[in-house]
Image (tube, rainbow, N blue to C red; front, side, top):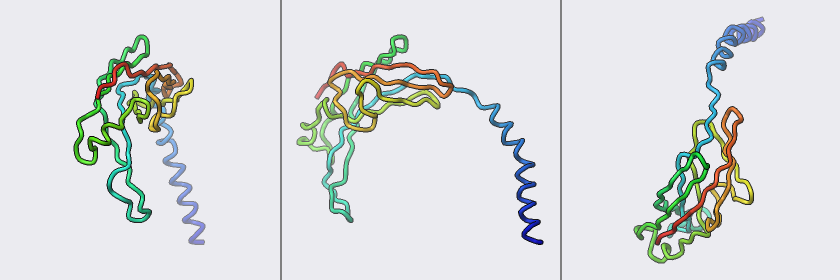
Length: 157
């Protein structure tokens, strides 16, 4: 009898709070933004330290310096990338290996937007050849979408 009352009490509490939960959903905004707000690139390489379990080299990321021009009207992002000076694990030998054809890209988007590679572009966060422009579809939470073109217009060592 005691177990039966406990189960009924749980259901009763849930039913009492259910209207409060659903009323919050109505207040949530339907975000409609499809804008890219930032673009950046990393060079990834095997660092000097080894994983204690596998013995494999631990991957290291070096963020490259990026200046970008975001044109909202044409949905184009032009980027100037500069390879930073060597320091720490990022040695001169590793700096010499940085090429535009093997970079890891990332973007920041407006609230609740998602990004999808199209027309042969690789998924962001994976290595790709950035010697050519890349296209992505940015989708807002409300279903709006826009095609963006991202390209490196200058690559400096």
